[in-house]
Amino acid sequence: MLVRSPHNSHNPLPRNYTTGRRSACGRKFTTIAQYGMFICLHFFSFAAALRPQIPIAAFRTTATMMSQTAPPSKKAKTALDEMDKKGAFIRTDAGFRDWVSGSSEKFKPEAGRYHLYISWACPWANRCAMVRKLKGLEDAIGLSVVHPTWQRTRPDDAADAHCGWAFAAPGDPPLAPLAPGGRPVPCEGCVPDAVNGAKFVRDLYEKANDSLGKYSVPILWDKKEQTIVNNESSEIIRMLNSEFNAFAEQQPALDLYPPALRAAVDAANAWVYPAVNNGVYRSGFAQTQEAYEEAVDELFAALDRMEALLATNRFLAGPAFTEADVRAFQTLVRFDEVYVVYFKCDKKKISQYPNILNYCREIYQVVRMPSFYTHQIQDN
Image (cartoon, rainbow, N blue to C red; front, side, top):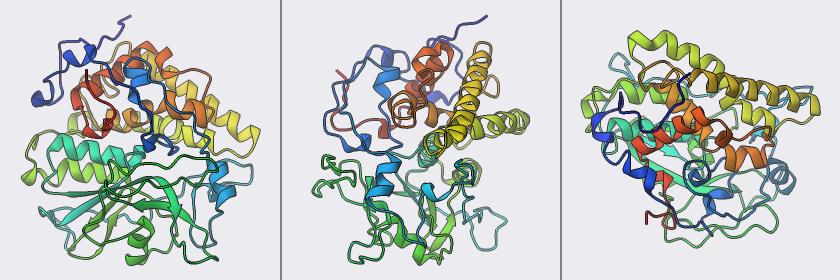
């Protein structure tokens, strides 16, 4: 059996992302003390799994506490509203599913026309940010980044208690989290909405005449049509992968969904999404013991399967880095710091899966996403 090594010399990833790949292993981070992204349920610290242990503050911001502090209104929904009769979390499908393509009559690929709204704290949104960077689409597609904590989206309306993503600028005063006793969270890493001037992600959905009331990120926005094109991350990354190559400055030829591997990519996504990507949420949001145990058992069976697969495969779909790895990576790197603690996915840590851990290290060292850093995480 092959034990994976982050020093494997074969590199199917884009050549210009190999710089510093090995030297990164020897770097250390300083501590994180105040940075607010850790308050959000979805955020993570790479250091615990990929670097020497970093002490972080213990936060008690859980989905249950959010719900008790500010229950959602009848129209505006959160994940806690997506439960079946046995208390299992059932994710609602995204409501905007249009497609940017050369064959589309309404949404043509154009540089500067589209804008991406994300949270660095959200694994689904970070998929899109990752592909945007890999392809070199930073100049072609704009970016706005919300604050990592939820805020009251209609603070002047006592009857509307919905809480969700809020925009802020780096120089703004820290925002207090909703959970009782939480420390104010700095606005570093935020990018305000310069396109629509929205204060909350909810504003964008209402401007686009949304009818579902679930105000999530990512959002791919069309500045020309003044509407949301798509808010399904799996579809947005495919658009970024294939429809904007004419404007890609780094890797226009990079194909994360190549025809020769599509069957393998689809097969990987088919079990990684329900059991791992969504599995951590099914575990964390479960309202009954039965629903929790079912989700956790499926999650760790899938991680065991992934560990065995990565003993012989370099990536999930074979020898090449694909969208299957983009999708899996964003959950795996958050696992030990967030999902083990807050979502009680605690049978085992990713740091206890040697093949998965080295797989994450390799992707992290190659891609070197700037969002993985803060002003308080620096190389020595």
